[in-house]
Length: 75
Image 1 (spheres, rainbow, N blue to C red):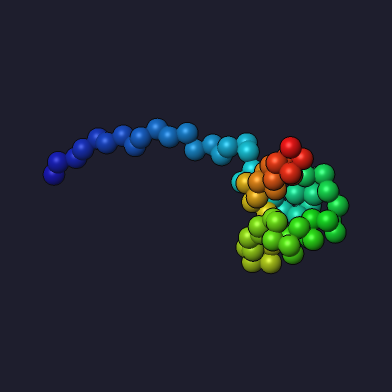
Image 2: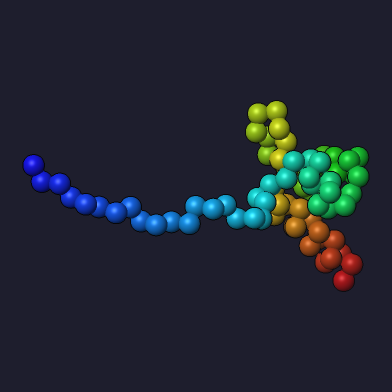
């Protein structure tokens, strides 16, 4: 019987410190808006949401995109 000694590649498995999505309370804190305003933006489809079970997540790129659109309007 022949045996081979194979080493697994060494990968950095640590997660990035940057969040990919926020829960509603985290998004409120991150964007600095009130709950009602956040839900209005979701209803107007200015912010995307993702449902995972009963949990609602707001992608970080959706929050950034909304803030960028406000900057463009102001310019």
